[in-house]
Structures are given as structure tokens and as C-alpha cells.
Image 1 (cartoon, rainbow, N blue to C red):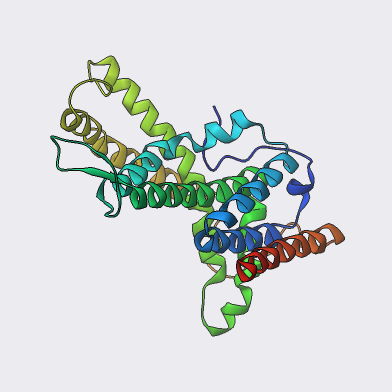
Image 2 (cartoon, rainbow, N blue to C red; image 1 turned 90 degrees about the vertical axis):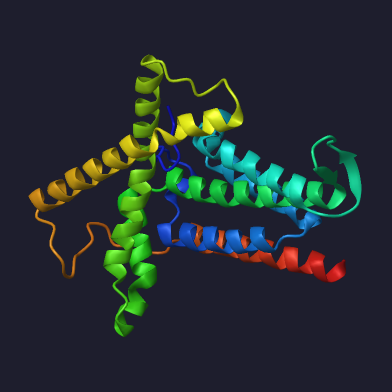
Length: 263
């Protein structure tokens, strides 16, 4: 099963791009997503779809990678839908809740932004080797090392966090299945009962995370990891395709700003 943060081997143009270019593009795209208006969001969605097609990622692969955040997307949508004031569309009597036009628009917008941000990060991790991702982050942060910013340590922390995401999700699924085998029910009952059932997973999941972290620390020590300067097996060099990708990203950003100026 494909998990969020998992690398998928491939030989596409997106896979072959320099990791620094992909990281910078994801950061720029994230800023565009956060600042996009309703017409611009359609253009950003088309751009994301084009990147997914260029990376030859199937709809099933993308859906499987994003499945863990479906609950949070639904939560974001309904919170804004039910608790944003504005022009009424539908009353939920006898509950003191009302769906408004502004709530529907804001819920859709915020949910789309969240999904777009996660999808951008998922494309990055699915098309970039973890070692290349660490090297790219370290090279981008290297100028800050002159003012005392630990670029190598930050890059390592980011890589470890990305590595832990699928591991934690795997542990969550394993613990959930084990508790279901013992009679736990996560799918029926009232909302409060289901929340309490899910909360029962917190303690064993936290203990499993600490155990995995301890195992990772021991593995790093066994492989001779120490603080201090390190070298890279593969030196990063920008190629023509990397410059072309940066040009495409810049042109897309300018196009969005142009549509905003016209409107």
C-alpha cells in the first residue's frame, strides 16, 4: 500500500529534476496556493494535474497517498461550513446551526488549499529519493550556515520526519487492526464514542513512535553517524531541464499575477 511520504521509483522528467529545483518549486507553489483566489485556484489545480501526469503518477497512487488526510479535510470543510456567518442557505433546525453561502465558499477554499499543500509535498516525496532530498535541503540552507544556522542538522531532521510519516501511519494501522481484533469498534456508535475509541490508540501509538525513534538512533550510531561536516556521494549540478523547470514555474507565477491584475 502506498503511504504519504513514500518514494516511488521512476524515470520521468520530474524524477530527474534536481531536488533543489523541486523543493523551491514546491515552496513557490505553496505560496501561490495560499494566496490564490477562486479563478486562480482552477489554474493551480490544472498545473498540479499536469505535474502529476508528468511524474506518471496514477490517480490510485495519489489517492492512496492522500487517504490519511481525508478526515482532516472533511473536518476543515464542515467547521467552516457550519460556523461561518453570512447569507443563509440552509437551516439545520432544531440544531442551532446554519449553512451559509460564505461558509460553503470558505470551507471549499480552505479544504482545497490544504489538499493542494499536501499534494505538492506528496509529489515531492514520491519523486525524490530521501538522500537527494536531504542533499537538496542542505545545499539550499548552506548559505545560512555562515550565520550559525545548522543546515546539515536541519536537513537531517526534515528527512527523518518524512521517513517517520509512513512509519507512524503503518504503526497506527497495525495498532488499530489489533484493537479491532480484540473487539474495539471504530466505525459505529455516537460521535463521542468513536472519538473515545480513536483516543485509545494515542498511548500505544506514542509508545511505538518512541520505540521507532530509539531504534533509529541506535542504527545511526551503529553506522558511525557523528556531528560535524559531511560529504555527499553525488554532487548536485543544475542541468538544462532544471533551468527549464524553473522558467516554467516563474512563468506560471507571472501568469497568475497577470490574471489578478486584469481582474
